[in-house]
Image (cartoon, rainbow, N blue to C red; front, side, top):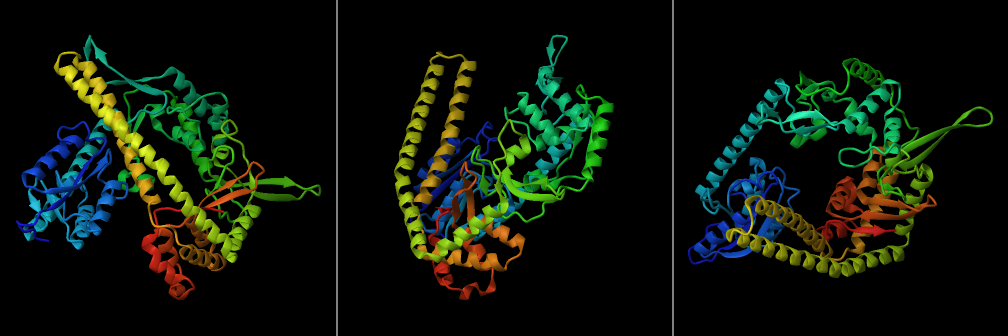
Length: 555
């Protein structure tokens, strides 16, 4: 879209800074906003709105609420140009940058980068964008490769990368009265006890849950102050750091693959830090770990549809599959299937109780209750009415909370200006000045994130009321698919349409909270080729855009 000189540009300013970049000169939110605002005034641009994503990485598009809001506003033609300080504020990935600009182009919205001086309202600007995107991607990949090379070299020389595990801390290294550029690693005695207990107990045949349960009952806590879990115990037993070695390359492409990027060719190097566990104990534990890993996992005689959906009545944690085996009087075994608290299963009785609910009873109740709601339109209509009324009532307290946050932000901004004045008048020394500014900055970032979350929640509650026809059509389709689908499909459907199920202390179902959002609609529309001809499907298709992000129905 080409702008003419006689047409005033309506500009949307977008700024972003990740947590890592906040301390870097020129990247701060305030600096970007001031620069872009001054630039807009210089060229007589009308600023429609400032969109600010604070403390958020540019690797992903989905976790940036302000970016998503800006793209939605672009579709509604609320402005005609997006202005950024540098193009990498919009995206650090060439593919993501292209996706965003394509959305803007489809809605006749230009994209301008102030420092790179290109404008996608022109053919030359579009060409430059692709070139800059490719250059930015190459720059980012080169930085990643250099960081990896540096980390590997540190590992080769016996130095750790990243956070230290439980049992260790980093301290200043002073040699001959001179402070070294690198810190050194030393053992924390009170945490060393925990590590040794875990290794020694596993070496004597104890299981993961037994060890975690005992540690929790003895009052030990993790580095973050939480309870020990099965996965936490496993992580400690598998970490060669405790025997004096450094592992490198455990995961590949962590930012994209996470734990799925587990590297089968893990490298280890001798560390320069002290070991907590002896070589003999380490070898014995690793032998037992390998031996136990080939033993068949406990199999459950049954298919659990509601794992992670049912919530524990005591601690609120998800409930997971469980079974017990008992003997009858005639000596035969009987297996009973339950849903039990995952905190109890993973961390033991110190954290919670089993609070088990029978599998068959829970699943039958949920399915029958859904069918009952579908069969009685008056019940479903009452539920939808209550949801819409509840949405309306929630707006006022959310608005009050948002106003409170805005007042706090204003107060902190005033306090920051006051400290600047005091510093300029020599009323504060540099160390105290920096400390107070850091404290205010952290609180401001927290409040700005909270403000964004609050705005997102209010947006959901201001959305169009949920339609009875939409909900009825979805439940009708849900009922049919439950009868004709495989177990994996049925479980997927359950997790798609049900947000959570709460139970009473009496171990019976209390209520079922259901989700009806765009993902739900899309999934059900594509679940069966005949859906276009199913009763109510026309209403679903026509109403798709009126649904909010997530709507819960308590049954």
